[in-house]
Amino acid sequence: MPDAYNVALMGATGAVGTELLALLEERNFPIKSLKLLASPRSAGKQVSFKGKSLTVEETSAEAFKGVDIVLASAGGSTSKQWAKAIVDAGALMIDNSSAFRMEASVPLVVPEVNPDDAKDHSGIIANPNCTTILMSVALWPLHQIQPIRRVVVATYQSASGAGARAMEEVKQQARAILDGKTPPTESFPYPLAFNLFPHNSPLNEQGYCEEEMKMVNETRKIFGVSDLRVSATCIRVPVLRAHSEAVNLEFWQPFSVAEAREAIAQAKGVTLKEDWEANYFPMPIDASGEDDVLVGRIRQDLSHPNGLELWLCGDQIRKGAALNAIQIAELVVAKQWLKQPTAVSV
Ligand code: A2P
Image 1 (cartoon, rainbow, N blue to C red):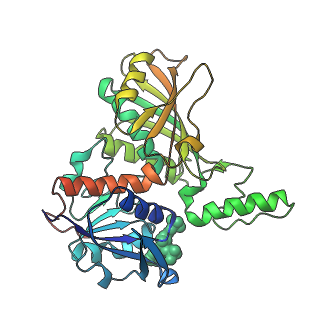
Image 2 (image 1 turned 180 degrees about the vertical axis):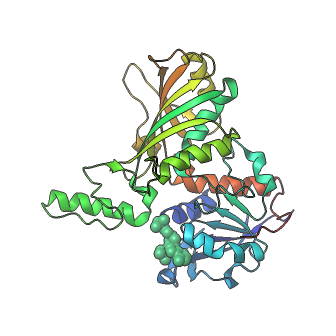
């Protein structure tokens, strides 16, 4: 097993790419060489890593030669454009986009939930949707004790989910509104500052948006329960970073609040954070910059004997994206699952 790896970040200048870079340094991932790739707009830009200045390169097939792991977070169309070149170069692509998540040959992995799925990759492992990762980490320990029958979730999603430019735009919108000016709306269809709106991804004929269907289909794939009942309402809120979710759970059997709390308190990747006396529960500002998903307000659903309600907040850029991707990289390296058994056709 090599003791260090040639790594490339595709989308290195974006919100998730920047966090990936910080996490590679913070977690001391064993790196032999590091390439920073982005669009031609960023070529030549200098970025610092471990005290050294690295130059951002334009993404090209040539750039993937000799690379062992590509951490991709440059959007679905860029992932689709370069996947074949990455796989042909013999690298493992850990892809943050939704491009390949539902393909049968592509494992969709949350390391706390389904680490063994990562073994069967054919050159690509997909990182799930951010809200799905956060919910999966919180629900899996409960599902291990008492299988879940149905999930009804409402999300409160921060601007970071739409990228670095969207985060900046929300700040500009707030300034413009306070100054009595018309807020800019380039990243979003409507002003997000001092407002909220249902997630602006395309709608299907049943009235669900793409983001909501990701929560349905990806949770089923990650949990390995193809008929798990999931219904989601995804809302964008004027929070910069960290998503929140109100989750209603129906189990096949009654599940006591005390037992659920204990399961969350013991589980990896989640922290039980609640102070009932002080009426204090997780907030996005608590979750920002944290690795764990914060869970609180676990309570009996008054409308159903087998139901529980809970509230969670998680850093969308960190566990919802970059951290999960790095954990996948750490997993495949530790288990020596890096090399593709067979190349996938993409
Ligand atoms: P760039 O900064 O040069 O536009 P975010 O999710 O924060 O919007 O970031 C998107 C990331 O994907 C950025 O690093 C961006 O680079 C990169 N990117 C966007 N389009 C392309 C492309 N066509 N090829 C390679 N990288 C891209």
